Length: 477
Image (cartoon, rainbow, N blue to C red; front, side, top):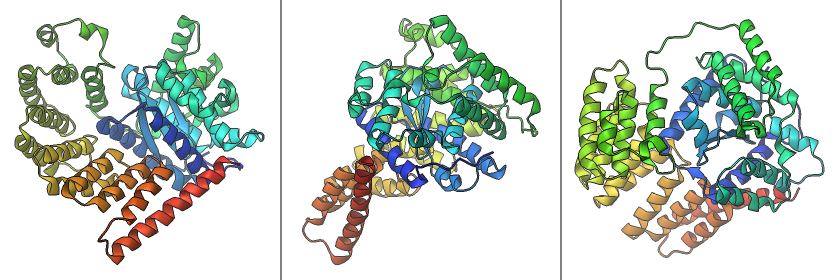
């Protein structure tokens, strides 16, 4: 368990193919750039991976690749998730927002992680000798687009393939699905979740398929039958379930993030909330997560008076919560956002810095730091904004929003060469190699650069040009 079959696609080639697909997804405009939700997913998956390696569920050459995994959210209401070559996982907002529990969500991620560690997509590539890398990438994008309920997003994904790929190019074999179920269940258990969560998720999706008369989105690439559900149930009985530490607040952070997303963006607002007046809604709230969601609804609707009252209630409630350590940073993010909306930048900065001083690892940390940078820029404290951005990128080097802000700051300060260098790094994070090369060339031609600066630009330019050439070569295989 954990080792993968020998395939034609090497781990390095998988990373190239995965980056090409990821780049097309970014270009389509369907990625939800939400630092808090993304980092929540990343932390959960990282914990499972760490446990998987410790328990020999992930071994050999798969370890370096999986340790460099990436996860991102797709703005799509369909219940879906997908694995890409090179250890990338895409999660539809429909899945994030509509599962009944954190465990159900993680059960799907565990299944997708198993597809990656077993390199099932690589096997598909190896088995399709007639296909180029370009067509394989198109097949993956097509499978995503077919399950999309957003016509514009679907067209954006399909354009890359130019009709070259068919829907069934990305349907996993029965053997691959059973293998992913088996290993995914082990991942789920090793991550501290109840194994029945996977059964619940599969049964819910299967029931939806039967009621609608068509395959649920996730099943469009993951064939389902009752035999699969029965096998997962039987495996639960034989799994060696280690004792797990009970967590009274288990899933609460997830539920709060879900409430925020549902209530802070028109794309997600539930119909039941759209028809209610804000005052009526506040009176009907009993759960803290719903109150938190209501706060973000107030922000969306610029009802700052109500928002301040909600913050007061949330702070009082969280202060006596057994889960205070996890929930308080989220309340502080909300309060900092309110002060920013009211143009009280100094107050917002004070709240964020006080929260960060008490914070080590938390899914809200990068979101707080982004808000801090936003405050510094709007308060015209550009040097502090630059210093904060530099620090953030040491931990999150692929955050293209931060790179973009750093380019903006440098431009405002009159550092043209640095602005182009940071724009290049933004494009590198997006795997836009050609655009990155253009920005580095512009930076190199700026006046008054010293020898060391020119050498650094030359080194980075050579590195990115080599990556770009390799991508072109791979695409033409």
